[in-house]
Image (cartoon, rainbow, N blue to C red; front, top):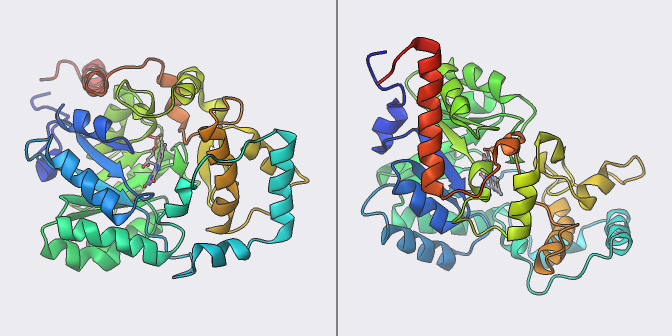
Amino acid sequence: MAHDPLRTKLCDMLGIEFPIISFTHCKDVAVSVINSGAFAVLGEAMHTRDEIAADIQWIRERVDGKPFGIDLVLPASVPPSDTLEQLIAKIPEVQKEFAQQIKEKYDVPDPKGPIALHQWGGLNQDMARAQLEVLLDERVPVICSGLGSPAFLLDAAHERDIKVFGLIGKTRQAKRQLEAGVDAIIAQGYDAAGHTGAMGTFSIVPEVASIAGDTPIIAAGGVTTGRHLAAALCLGASGVWTGTLWLASRESDVDMIVKEKLLAATAEDTSYSRSISGMTMRTLKCPWTDEWMKPEAPQVLPPPYQMLLSSDYIQGANDNRRADLMTEAAGQGVGFVTAMKPARQIVFDIVEEALTAFEGVTGEVD
Ligand SMILES: Cc1cc2nc3c(=O)[nH]c(=O)nc-3n(C[C@H](O)[C@H](O)[C@H](O)COP(=O)(O)O)c2cc1C
């Protein structure tokens, strides 16, 4: 093979060396990945305007002008402007009682402080728009939308030289976003951590790539090795978008209890359910996800109500570091996350594995 197979149009668009994108909530991971030649997108859906502005500045001070992205959730299917109290008041008694039964059965402690998920941009559209304003004001290089179409912000972003990436789980969502003019599509399959659709990564990536023309497609869902990266490029992607891969990295601020759970977990330890947010989501199994799977469980509530219900359990477990209760979003590739490596090492290992994979198929590569 005459050219470097890892030099893709995504690399050219972003000015990066390796076509690997880290989605992370941890600024230290993001900076380490960016300074290793790959790209990072910081998840800010749970932060206020001021926190987001401070994080952007923090990253800028450490990456020497290299680009980075910020991810928000911009869901269309939630109430436009209800207050938190109004939303909570709408939760039906049946589901509230079931949540209370889980709390009693597992002795789930109360959260120790204000509930972080109450800041989530997915709770109402006003919250998400306030978060978005700061990204436009700060002219961050890339804005990503993890939920909901970013089509409405394309003009404002492009006027400011900001690129917009949309994450999709269905081909028809990709088609709409491509028609609207997004700069790249993240095609995410069922294997993924967090909110994800029902189509497998191996199916959605080539299907979306086949309609994308020159727009780069980024494969997501289950990518935790260089072999996944090589395969994603062969499926028509120009890079990979990864989340689970970084959770147990040395720099990651994920609780050590959860890191240990992740290092021990395999795909079978993940659960795909609507019980956390009302939307299909993959996480490590925990009593909350198990109980809502049972036949006697009431109907899961639509977004954003189920999230308001689960957030008390999640934060109670986290604040009190209850290993038996804690959970985290995790994808089916988690079985390959077996060591707590520095993020820089993860980047280089993936690159080397991908080149070895290509070499195995085609002979020598540059
Ligand atoms: C802990 C965690 C939290 C996540 N939160 C978000 C989020 O807030 N917004 C978002 O767009 N994606 C979120 N994701 C999904 C990632 O962006 C990414 O699509 C997913 O992790 C890809 O699958 P993988 O984990 O198998 O690599 C999250 C993933 C993880 C692991």
